[in-house]
Length: 393
Image (cartoon, rainbow, N blue to C red; front, side):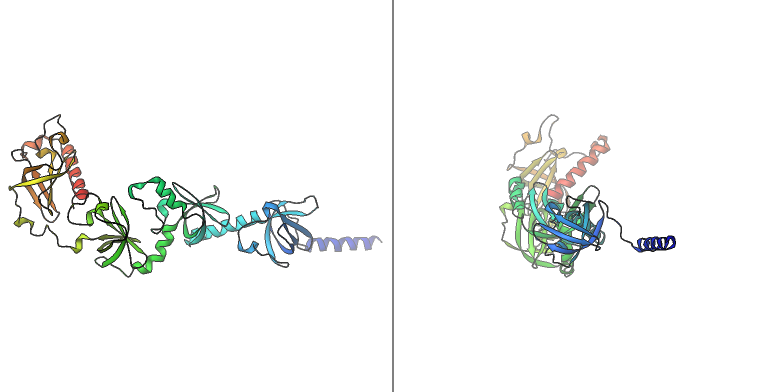
């Protein structure tokens, strides 16, 4: 009897040793076969030894493998309780789905692959989106040109209204910030859009002429849609050779316009309309020469000088140092916009489209100005160049 008992114990020990089944613990992700499925719960057979149940809020997760489950399907779930009131494993699709989704998102981030997200809400900073049930943020700056809210005057209420119009739709994005630990996910629609436009953009080169429709007018220029779904910006300084104060006064959405491609930076395309027109500065030396006294109308006044119109095509800058403004006087108190005065041409650069002016008799002697500190002089030159570039057409 003793030998028989020892043999049975030995066989049992061998069976236990060969059995690789381990009792699941809370937090484990396990695989099971569906034995019953309804809207209220899903029951799983776990290795033929245990029964697990998924119910309530743990039942629902937006992932393909959890929708339309049928008896016999194999699916993964996470253990949330090793024994419920019925002595069964309490399981969750939500936890398992989230883990699998984060794995998918990490892979998409590493490979820079696009994903589809649903737009759920909008605020002034951008859009609140989700992939499956994982929330993410899509900043306004990362919207594609098609959805970017270009609103004249930057009206925040109108910008928010346009963003809200996107709620309920889906869009393709790329992940630009991935942080599972803090559950932080930031995505870019612009990056996904740029990827799709590469082949189309490669058909164009700097110097090409395009024709398109104006889709937005801003204080700094106009946006043009051309060749189907490409977009380019014509900066205010590239709209015309003449100075333009406000693009809204000369252009409107829907207008057709021809322009030349001057820069391509990835998916960013910059255009120029004025370069398709004759340059009025060509041969300007035949009209104006250094030392000549001319009539000029003041177009704009700023702290360091006057912008002056000599004719419809040629504008010049009269620096404050060449205006005879006394210490303590404000330039806007001495001169008025629209006032026509005599000016002396003191410099002329047709290539850079620059013409320097001075009030006759107020031309500052360069030798006498050497006492001015170098830093102050450099700053004035920098200000002058910056203003001329942004204001001169």
